Image 1 (spheres, chains in turn yellow, cyan):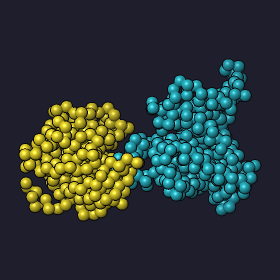
Image 2: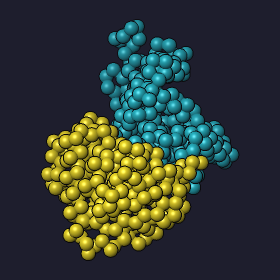
Image 3: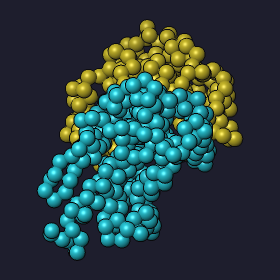
Length: 240
Length: 295
């Protein structure tokens, strides 16, 4: 709790958020807030609306209503590139590595949005594999390497709020463990993280709070301390 | 005189050179189409009209303002490119993300309007543009006569094609373009101003077409309909090459010019159709084109 003094700062506040893809109504009035330096997860089954919540924050869904405040600024009318420039780093599901670009090009593609991002040397010491493969095409990377690259890419930009979508999906346990170490380090640096995660055992020891989603709504908010007492309820929602 | 397959070498090399020149124009035009298609995902049916505008601009700049060839070769593409950016901003942007048929109809409509307006003013008989003084004449290579201007067309077109390829494949700006071709929404999510990038890309593609037009002004008949004639062939070239690759567009353009040239030697009647024949064959064997990525 070294960042306790920062935790009063509200980095993200979502109120009454509805989101639509064409005719389908995906999010039905989301309310949540994330304080600076917090790691918050969105839990739930597939199709509960967790990825859509992240996309809606980035203004990457068809239509949205409600309010999304980032650093106290209303962003509902902002284009995605303006939202990124508020210090938001988005790591999409399926990683979004550009196959026509090599590792170095992928890594340096996103522009610096704030000062204080990681230098290339720091990134390469965190992910040594990426240095070895810096000249390889994005399409030639393994799933784990792609995920490391997708993470590294947004750490360089200086973004101080990361939206991470299913970063452990389909990866070997040793790589999942590595990603866990990285998240701990980022938390120590004071970054705010919103994590969409299927792997509850990965998320549980890292997170300060959990939001449980079902049918496009938040049905439960659980702090790290309450996990044990609410485990059975959580199991019911997650269907494990 | 030496002969190959019963054809004098002079005739053969003459047609080969004409083929390379036509191919240079096909390459410039299909390159512009490929750049635009990559990021905007639209097939720019106004491309022929932009080529025509480049040529008309070059002629009118001289007739009205006395602007010489070298200045026009730079200025005409810039003027037409800016016009392209205006079109993108006020028209194409409104239908972004809609079905292909909308952009097809819109750009085709733009082409017809431009062609119609200019035909009304200048007629279809063609404007005269005199060859710049320094390009008069040519050199005798021993086996053929090479007019200076035609040599210049080949050099200029290849330089611009290579420059474009280098810019797209090897520079940071080019990496934005390549990434945008794959997933422009994610690029925007990283903080890149994609709408601006799209405008500039369309402007650049149009500029390539207008440059080809300016280059063509001294040797081809400059008229409001010159674009629609060449565009059909260029579309066939694009289909043969496939939309996937920048280098592919250039190579296919040159190759088809040469194929057309040789056909003129051996079977003149077929020269107008040969590119479309190749297109049919390629479509049957490799529908995504010679250099296209498998769909």
